[in-house]
Amino acid sequence: METDKEPIVKQDTFAALRYKDFRAYLGMRFFFTFAYQMQAVVIGFYIYKLTHDPLKLGLVGLCEAIPAIGIALYGGYVADKSEKRKMLFTIFSAVFLASLTIFLVTLHSLSSYVKSGWIEPVIYLMIFINGIARAFYGPATFAIYAQSIPKELYPNGSTWSSSTWQIATILGPAAGGLIYGVYGITATFSIILALMLIALVLVYMLKPYPPVYIPKESIWESLRAGINFVFRTKMMVAAMSLDLFSVFFGGAVALLPVFANDILHVGSEGLGIMRATSSLGAVLTMLVMTRFSPMNRPWRNLIIAVTGFGLSIVCFGLSRNFYLSLLFLFTEGAFDSISVIIRGTIMQLLTPDDMRGRVSAVNSMFIGSSNEIGAFESGTAAKLLGTVPAVIFGGCMTLLVVSITFLKTRNLIPAKLADIGTPREK
Image (tube, rainbow, N blue to C red; front, side, top):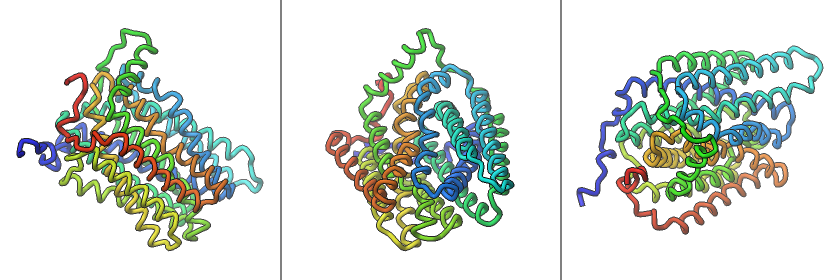
């Protein structure tokens, strides 16, 4: 019937961008992500060149994931009861200082003729600090996004927000790999620090976001309320679980330095291109989805997208041709972007305003650190099985996870966007 069609799917492509604060939010997120992605490429390649140990690449992810998961719930609690703009400025300042420290440490290693044993631990410590910042960053930005545009524009805003993030993850790794390869680590980190300063300035272009939640109960009761809300919302739990396990086993990106250096022999420049290609597939797909929303049958489309993601990982692991590998990275990014938009919209629609920080914190424990935990799993598997078998194993496990999820959630397959709403409002 005509009434079953969702008006949100047909809305103005640029609807969310017509809100000034949403544009400031996108700019802040773009420059911060750009710098962060540049830094990830540089640190990954630098650590691997320093140690020639794929397990160390996994440790990089683990150092960030441990604090991001460990204090995520507290970060969500603080975000719910705090002014968000001031909170973001503190977070960005901490990340900037950690990046500056890494920069100074690498400068010392370049100027010293003797290897300093403390360089690697200091880098891990700074990554740990970044993980602490991430525990607060996710809930704060989740809440700002929700308050910067009307609720009926969440699907459109999610597409633009994800697209902006993916564009940054295209340009960031490519710029990081190319600048590092041509001009060295000093020039690369100088640009990273400059971009982080721009993000700091853009934070102040946001309006103040006062708390919508004033805790009247203890912190433990408040956190328990957020956890209980998530786990009694079936679609939310299923979406988070699917992402957690698929990304955990499909973390091939963490091993790209090994593929670039030892298997495909394309160096740091090739590494930047490989990292960017996955994001290119994602952003092009997201731009298409500003016109053709995947939210007509969200759960069905999510299952299809994660299946395509797993198949792309397996094919990438089997490839020995650089250009064929780029193709599979492109499709991996394209399928992943579809799941990101669907999952993000589901989360925003199901979460009440006074719980956004705490629900985002639970979400980050499932999803926000799954990349880093997946990086550790991939690094460990590569150490035990070899790099190529580890990637193929991860892709196969992703396909197994999505098959089990499909069997357990078949009743959600027919659901339409109109069937999704905040439980409190139903």
